[in-house]
Amino acid sequence: MQTDKLFSEVVREWAKVFMHRSGRDFKRFMDATGLSFSQINILMRMMHEDSIGVSDIGEKMGITNAAASQAVDRLVQMGLVERTEDPQDRRAKRLKLTPDGLALIKKGIEARSQWIENITQSLTAEQQEMVIRALTLLTEAARQMED
Amino acid sequence: MQTDKLFSEVVREWAKVFMHRSGRDFKRFMDATGLSFSQINILMRMMHEDSIGVSDIGEKMGITNAAASQAVDRLVQMGLVERTEDPQDRRAKRLKLTPDGLALIKKGIEARSQWIENITQSLTAEQQEMVIRALTLLTEAARQMED
DNA sequence: CTAATTAGTTAAGCGGGCTTGAATATATCG
DNA sequence: CGATATATTCAAGCCCGCTTAACTAATTAG
Image (cartoon, rainbow over all chains, first blue to last red; front, top):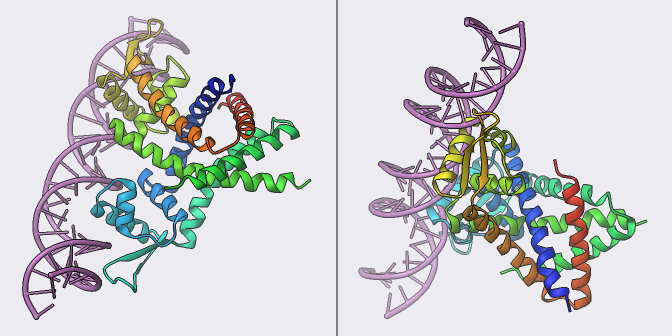
């Protein structure tokens, strides 16, 4: 089977194009929102798991808890994150996106989606159908591989 | 046709999962290489167009020429970028990735590719085939939409 | 030839995100 | 209860990437 050889090559090319675009989009999003790379990452993390603690953030982001606390504080002051005391353990804080925070991140995702949709407009209906099915598969598979 | 409605939804879900992963990978790559977000973006830009000028960098990245010059200088000192005088216009510099610089960026791409390959290992051969064809289409289409 | 423009660099300074180390408050263990 | 561990915050300070402003050098326009 020649599929394997092809496979790596195809994926690598896709990653190359996508990473480039990805970087540019990220930068634009940072400029548009005034948020730092780190802050956006934190918000995205929060979108995926609701009710997360400050030290979880630090751990996942590879920064100290002090840094995480400061970053979260900035986001709270911007009204993008809600920080409430955990009733079970009053030392801990529960962090959650506010509606504003969620809306902001969704706008970022929307921009990225738009790019892919634009790309696919040059494809035939049949090809689009295949892209849909492939992305569905990839999304599913990716979800199941989450830490 | 219900395809259109589905389509946006599927793409949005994919973008959501992928952006999240993308951010984490980017962060890891930054930590692993000691490079900043901006520096990586510059290197990626250079990979796509060889022989670019300092002010082009500034323009594309949305930073001042002074900032671009400084960033490039750091990359040159790290041995990742080659800066030569343009014989046609001796004010200008031609910037190019060194072999080291290219290798470094490729390593980043490799990591991202690996993730997708891992994901797809849970798929059937038939499904993998579809993913390959879809990614090929997307890569092609994306290339034709550059800037 | 002079003046204006263009490409890039340099210098000074600012702000943000990070670190370490200490402080506070709560929880848990013996 | 007292000692220890855990979750977070505060304080001081560092480094880096950015900006503005001034400067050098080469090109182009009048």
